[in-house]
Length: 427
View 1 (cartoon, rainbow, N blue to C red):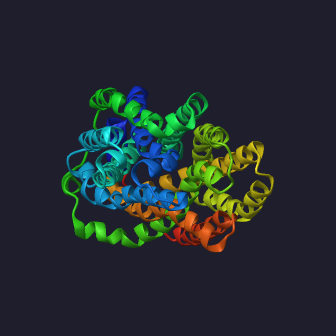
View 2 (cartoon, rainbow, N blue to C red):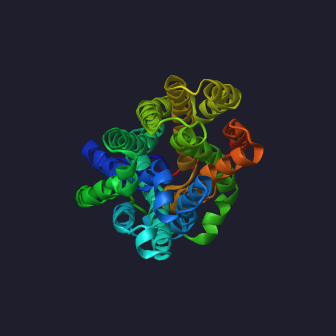
View 3 (cartoon, rainbow, N blue to C red):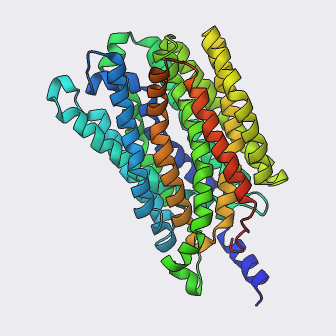
């Protein structure tokens, strides 16, 4: 049997029903809801666990703890993601989801600093580390599952579903934030309101586990492919370095969007209800722009779409933040958040589809998971902290634009290098 026949047979065996794809996406949304809720309530978490005379110091400590979760993502990528190539995508995804549920419940139940002193921030840091470890191990097997479930020439679209469901989690977290900010006074929101999304996420975890246990396995390896070998993986170090630069730019754009809530409250001094409204806009636009970006990637090619969108982000970042800082209105905030969500939704799916398609199947979960985890761990965890510090150091509310432009320049450099990378033959 020739190579084409073998590949075609493997594709038929690994194709899975849409209901199973929906199950993995539902679990992915729940996991990212738990992880991202911290960012939206960073101001309140900072006051609960990191009290300080200066509110900015409290916020910086809270954001630093948010970043701690990202420090653990590379470890999760190194430990959990390669298991997707050894024991299968399904058990690996169940493991990461279980760890996330336990960590979220821990944050929800941790007493404030006023009750237990230094133990409070210590516990929160531990639980954020566990959350980061879990998410770091999630991306590799989940992305591999979706890519391997995709019909021919639909990899970009299926890869976008991973991002769209994560953004759906952003939307739900934003809805909860708006509801809490609208129904609770500032004292109640600070005392206990911020804990609500973590309790909600923990309560839904059993349903997510039940969904993931119904999944089939898409990892079907033969011969040498059955046991991934480090020596073969080292041949893809150059490719991984290019992808890491690319993921750094997509990560900065993503977490800059998530930062808009804190930016609006802390820098622009806007009401919390308006700030969370921008979060709703970001989540809603991203849910639709991610599949749109995946579709365009399939139709016109991932590199072409990444280059075009990256140039647009580079050109528009400064004007968008300039308009927002001058107007400081709810309409301006929603407009800027929507523009960033649209561009990010079109830019990111092609990056994931390109990289996953360039890596052989029997090493895909490990290489993609580790590379993505390291890039996001470094840049996702530091973006909000770095931008907050930069705003203070420069005394310039336009600092987020400068940071975003630098990230896009790095991404465009990676896109230029990506043109020299051949696609992997293994599906």
